[in-house]
Length: 226
Image (cartoon, rainbow, N blue to C red; front, side, top):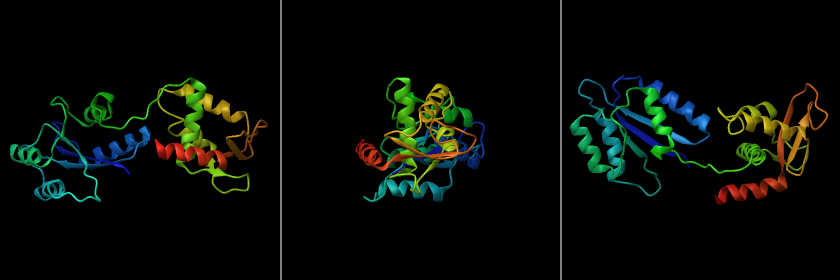
């Protein structure tokens, strides 16, 4: 289930609400995490928020339902005192944003920083080949690309496999290069491929890749367990 994060308050630069949410969703895709964002924006000069939206959020905390996960609330420093007190009374432990945040860029970088401890991290240490292999497998598992043989129908295009997170990430170009080298080794006990550039005899065609079904069963159990 996706993590839900609700931001409440305003920023000195007074950015557009939809623009901030769009940039947050784009960054979320880059980080390959699942987050549902909401922003209850406070407007200057008094930094009030819409009463209906505030009431709806606070009502969810005052009368929680077991089947509904409550969001993590991030309170910006620009918020009318009346609304701020209402948040503190209903929300046990809101995350407080630093007062020095000015605009969209500052807020996004703070939200996604490891120091904030808001976005779940799934980092681990490994050598380059291990990291590249894990990136390829996690992408194929996420896409549910596994088959018994080349006659199957669950495939991931090579351009998407190598060109999207987690294989392709800013600042980690060596992982993408190593992943491409692993694919050039051809079909293995883990991977199946089909298409014009399949295996060792690569041409100019387009390859599609999947996992052997036996390996995907093991990997899926490990993913769900962790």
